[in-house]
Length: 280
Ligand code: ATR
Image (cartoon, rainbow, N blue to C red):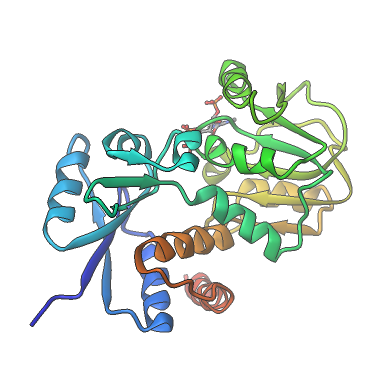
């Protein structure tokens, strides 16, 4: 009996990852015979675990915190969007048998913003954070032709570094949390602070009328950023669960050449999250 194709998400910690559930729902919907599990990788073991998994019956892996950079270094060949992001969240075999690294995070964000009908073109965007999560989405955001894209970060040098790296794609404004000025149509949180209940202090009045707020992070309860957006009177706001589903769909497509419908999967996940949150 032949075993079904194997996939996994590699991270640490990874036990609470929703990726196995998302891919199980995709596989059911697309009638794909495959298995997808979460593997917790010890520090220093990432290359060995990937090689072992991929050399057995592994067809592909997703990579999450803290291994996206290591996956970038491990890949034999990189897609352009992975090169831009400086990080890899999806690995698969290329046609010529090399390990291909891709990054589906930016595409995932753009698809989710589209679903929410949040426009980027000719909009003033403020991005909080200049770490790996921010880097992964900057190039698709710039390519969407916003009026302006401003990055604020606690460590301003990291923001300036991104400004230089992206210069060929468009102009990035850089500001400090205290010094950022103006009104924005969309504020995106890419800091990890929000997950720890911290929202860096921002001046009042940064949200233009009708502005949207989007948190790349996702938690079972509203993040500090979601709470801040609510307190600012922002009604169009979303956490990153939709992006998680969309980036997964893009990985699934790379692996299985079949594009799952994401809306029913997102609805299902929201119901499951609500059920666990209600009972805890
Ligand atoms: P990730 O890959 O998740 O982006 P990272 O590269 O460590 O992780 O980046 C985390 C981001 O959250 C950074 O922008 C970081 O700001 P600094 O570069 O100034 O450290 C931001 N961040 C984390 N904790 C923060 C806090 N308490 N206040 C403000 N920003 C914070």
